[in-house]
Structures are given as structure tokens and as C-alpha cells.
Amino acid sequence: GKRVKAGERIRFGHDGEACMLGALDATVLEKGEGGEALLAFDLAGPALDDAIRTTGHTPLPPYIASKRGDDARDLADYQTIYAREEGAVAAPTAGLHFTPELFAALEARGISRRFVTLHVGAGTFLPVKADDTSGHRMHAEIGSIDAATAAALNAVRERGGRIVAVGTTSLRLLESAVAEDGRFRAWSGSTDIFITPGHRFR
Image (cartoon, rainbow, N blue to C red):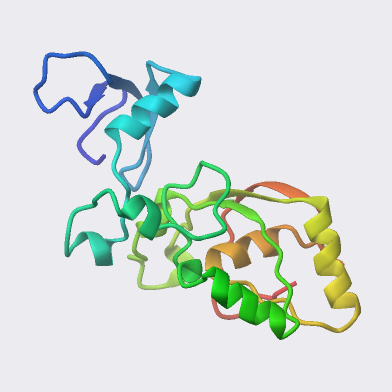
């Protein structure tokens, strides 16, 4: 995205073909500091979703993508077993190891689980380039916690139990959903919390 400029048109996935089937064209509206761009696609709604599915590729983390290209298996392999909503551009990799068998083993030990919705963004692939973390601008991610999950987490705390977040993306979302009094609430929005040494966990 570093070479494109606001106002330019981008055509995705044609590879020199004259056929307009599956056309996915957009206009660059804005450019960000890190090379990211805000695009206005010519399509919207289900037609845009279909075009992205047809034209797009599974975005893999650099430590996988540097070794090989994406393939059809990645749609299932690079996915958590609890994914439900479309919207993320990457899997929360800390949860990739969960299987139905592991969930059953945790449950047998009395460990309950709750789920949040978190749309991992492309910024998850960006490295920290600043020498001091105070100079790094953390990417934002969209997520939500429903009222039932918030109440269940509060109940765990009230009886002296522990809450274990799987992965930093989930932790950022939980921290966003906790009020100053330490109680979880239903929450939906964007979080750009950057957890560094000295962060006061709520």
C-alpha cells in the first residue's frame, strides 16, 4: 500500500484478463502513516463479500507466508475451531491449538470457557519499529462482549476464580470491557490498547 495515492483506482485479481466476471475495483480514499489505505469499493453488501471470497487470498502471518504461498487448506487450517463471525483478516494464533478434545479435557477439570467476538486486523502483522514502545502506535481492532459473557466473567471474579485470556488480542478486548471498578460490562467497539510493562490490569 505504500505506493498508492489517494484518488487512485485499484483493480484486484484480474491478472491481465479482459473478462469482468469477479471484478473487484476500488478507489483509494485515504492513506495512513504505515502504508495502510482506506478503500471505497465499487461493490457493496453481499456482492462485495462474494467478490472478496472469489478474488482474495488467506492472509498468512509472515512466519508462514515467507515459507510458502496460501492454499485451499488454509481456509480450514488457519482458523480457530470457535470462529463464528466474518470480519477478521487473521486468526488469533494463540487459539489455533484448541481442538474439541482439548476443550473436553478442560471441561472435565472444571474449567469453563466463554467467547468474545474479536475481528483481528491486518495491523497484527506489523512489527514494532520504534526503539522505545512509547513511540509505537498500536493498531486498533474491533470486537464485542455480550451481557451474558460479562455477567459470567463477573461471577468468576466474585467467587475468587481466575480469568485466563488466550492471547493478547483477547486480553486487549477484555481490558476494554472492564470498567474502572473492575467489573465487566457488555461492550462493543474499537480497542487500541497497547499492553507494555507497567500496564495496570483491571
